[in-house]
Figure (cartoon, rainbow, N blue to C red):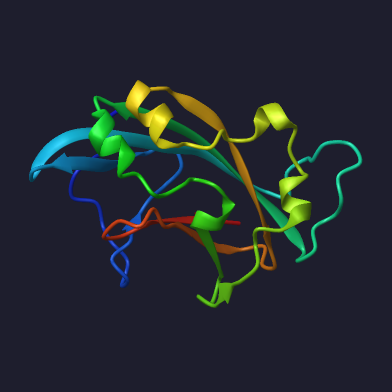
Length: 164
């Protein structure tokens, strides 16, 4: 995967304004020194994706599929142990086109939209320390056909992506 581009714009809340296909990253530090990176790319965002046969319909109006790739780079086991975030659905916050938060996007219906092999594996400290590349998707249950989603990994700022 490519390296993140420096100097990108931020929104009023300090989140990087990101686009599908761009590399993003979290830098790990130990004793105030860089200690590896976690690079991720949102490769595609799809409104109302095709779900598996027999999947329940959206509770809120629309499903939003976020396809991701995550690559740990040289993260020490000690720094990986400090990882307390996730790329799973609860780490994503959806907003409609007017900027109003859409709570409750992590529904059982959204979780049932994908085949198990399509779901993003849980990115835990073990995978990060081993440098395991993971690829998969997260589905949110959103009420608005147009808006933004913000990934919050408990860092100084998140990553904002437009959809719709």
